[in-house]
Image (cartoon, rainbow, N blue to C red):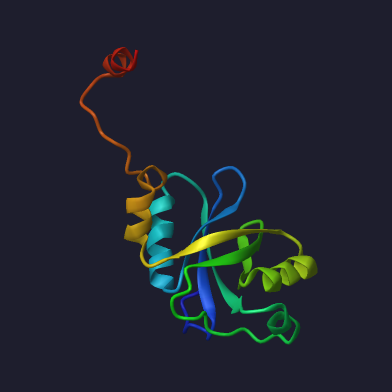
Length: 142
């Protein structure tokens, strides 16, 4: 991701390449996306894309991205490989997908990288530590 001024209507999508490239999280703040990228980088290939937000199919047709509304909790994201293409209302993102290919999914908008680490600790390398040996753990499980 280039360090530059934020464009109106942009969201920041973190994609992980652990296997196939998939969107991992969406942020309003690019610095939080970079923090999460750095957390995930130890375990997988990671990319961050700044993408336009489209509130409708008509907005896509007119190439009129807008600011995501306050209180918006989730968006549909279109991506191809390690690049996110757009985020927004589902029908608008379907239009982008039809034009440019790729896949789409729905993701929650996250407030911070720390929130993601708290919600999904194993995904960001914060595994539970134990002083037991692997044999002791297996015996405990059995």
